[in-house]
Image (cartoon, rainbow, N blue to C red; front, side, top):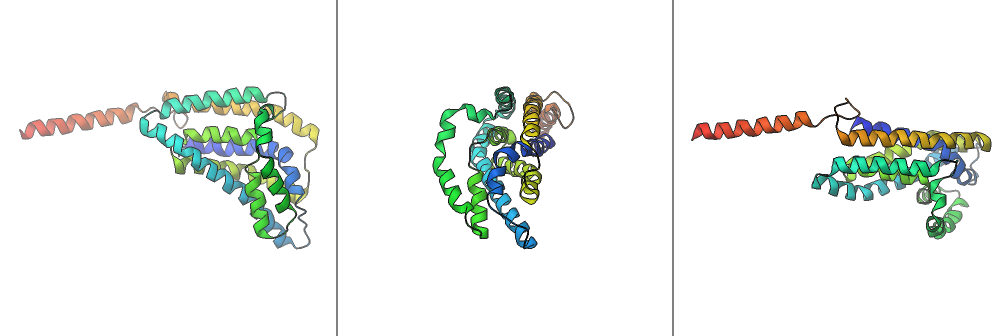
Length: 247
């Protein structure tokens, strides 16, 4: 996975952390973790967090099947540009401080069963329940996760897309771990201000994906494939020359 994707995945996750505090923070706080037994507290918190990250990684792997199909068909550049455009469109729908997924009615209704199951696991205090709480939390409708999954399509394959979503999940970890550790760190007014900035970050990331697909020769951001093509051509010519020399 190239550096543009690694930076995008972690950056997207970190920016999403502000969003996660407001959207998923109440779920984390409702687990009732206390600091009476500190080691147990930290381990249960991490178990919950890695449940979320595991779900993101698996979803990335599933979407990676599509990305790998585009890669094999030679359409990876087109896919990267399309993903960049789609991220920008999603970001534009997010202006005003609202999660764009809230504007899609069927998404809000589709996962009612997941929420019911989530409620059952939240009330239990064992590690298995913490992990399953994280797993189910990762399935809840979230515009930022949808953006990350869209971006993961351009990673180029199953393993790459899974790694992209794993890095995205790790990017959300600091804020989500801290909210369980320290309670609600940020008031609603502060979160609303940050939510207005996030679409701008998404537009920048969308631009990076478009540049990556254009291959215009910017190191690390949009490396050119021209050199590789020349190398292949020269190698082909060399083999042809060798063949004719033998004859």
